[in-house]
Each structure stands twice: as structure tokens, then as C-alpha cells.
Image (tube, rainbow, N blue to C red; front, side):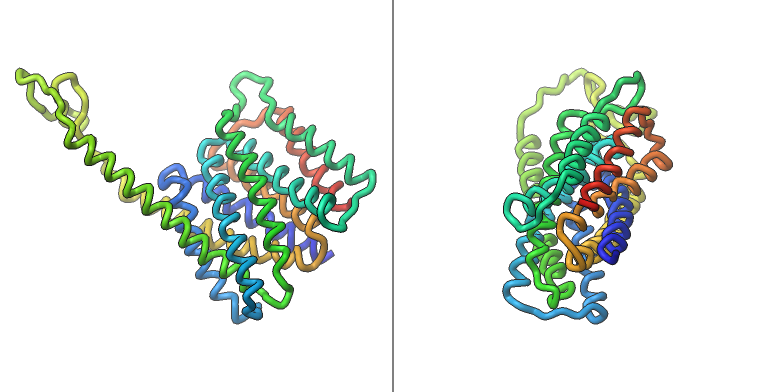
Length: 323
């Protein structure tokens, strides 16, 4: 089925993009990483427009713009959760929430109906969530409450993104996604500017605050390259590797943005080729790429019961797709 092929392909690409975005967020922060990724994605969307075409209508631009707002929240929360980690736990949790949300929407609001297999699929999905978050062994990765909250919020927002973008017309091609990226980039860079301005104001207020320094001591260089005053607090710390680190983080964010744009194009085509719930559930298999890369690159340890939870998550996704 075309929907399955497009959605699964998009899921694998999406998982790789999330892994790169999570790494970049550790250095750049969630807002800046998401903003850079949005710009990179916009370039890809514009490049594919001549190939995929699309009609420019007010309605489709509106749906695309709204999806840009929702998607910005979703990806910012996702990258923030992945930066906290562990990726191998939080990514599947986000995926399950993103799959269940469109399914419930289609069932309660739309005309989609699911039989016994769909109901059991939801039950299996909930069991998978419990197992994935359960850490019985000492030394196994343990998600924090903040990471879990960010992952759940991201999953709900991703599900809302699927719902919004599904309202665009088939004839629009990638036009809604272009509007999505324009709005995303504007919102996120605006947020980055606000955060930077607040940070500068705080630094200035700290700089003008009188600080009592003992007159009997002076700043002297130490072997670590920092000047220590009085009680040994460093006034500056040399970070010779910082520029290179920032460049590598930007490269990760740009690469993640390109892959995210490709994944979203594949998933949009998958939604248009079949049912929203089926495409969303199959697209929720993206943690496969994230988990594999996290285990290989970051050496994240996953407990056996968590592997069982991950396996059940994919079983649930397959059951929901068939339902």
C-alpha cells in the first residue's frame, strides 16, 4: 500500500532528523536548533516545489500557517526532551502519543471507525508506554519527570500537526509545508530574539550590581587559564573548543532540518494517499531510527523490559494500522 510505504519511509527519515536535532539542542538550545532547522527545511521545500507543484489558495496557506505554529511547538518540545534524554525512552513515548491523538480525533470527531483490533491496539500501546518508562534494573537509563512531560506534550502537538495538515487539499502539493516553514522560522527566530534580549538585560543588571571584593586579594592566573578572585571563583574560563563545537552543532541542526523537511513531505503524501490514522500510526515508528542511533552513537543502555516495551509499541502501531 502506498500509504504504508510513504509513511514508513518518512518515519525512518524523521527518526534520524530527531536524533540530529537532539544532539544539536545540547549545544544550541531547543529554540535556536528548531529555528535553524526550519530555515533549512524551507530551502528544501522551495527546491521541491517545481517537482511536486501545487496550487496556491488562501485556505491551504492558512492550514499550512496553522500547522507551522503547532509544528513549532511540537518540534521545540521534542528537541528539548531529546536533549534531556534518554532518547531511547522519550522518543518512543512521543511517537505513541502522536499516533493515538489523530486516531482518537478521527474516531470521536471524524467518520473513521475501528473494530476490536483497533481497541486492542490502543490497549497494547498503553502497556508499551508503561514498559518503556519502567526501569527495574540498576544502571539502566531513567527518564526524568521533566523529560517525560516534554515528550508527552510533544506527542500531543505532533498529533495535532497531523490533524491540521490533513485538511489541506491534495492539489496544493507542498504549498502548505512552505507556509508551515515560513511561519515556523519567523516564530522561532522571534522567540530566540526575545530570549536573547532578556538574557542581555539580566547580564546588564548583574554587571551594575555592586560586588564586594576583598582588598587583600587580587586576580591571579591559574593553570586552568581562568583568573580567580578572592575565594577562587573564576572570572573567565577559556573555551578554545567552543567555536568548533558551535559550528558542528549548527551543521547538525541544518542536517536535521533538511531531513525533517523530507520526512514531512513523505508523511504528507502518505496522509493524502490513505487514512489519517493509518498514516499517523505508521509515521509514529520513527523512534526506530532514533533508538538505533542512540544505542550506537551515545551507547545508551536499554533494559530488557524496555526492549519489550519498544517491541510492543511497534506491534501496537501495526495493529492500529490494520484497524
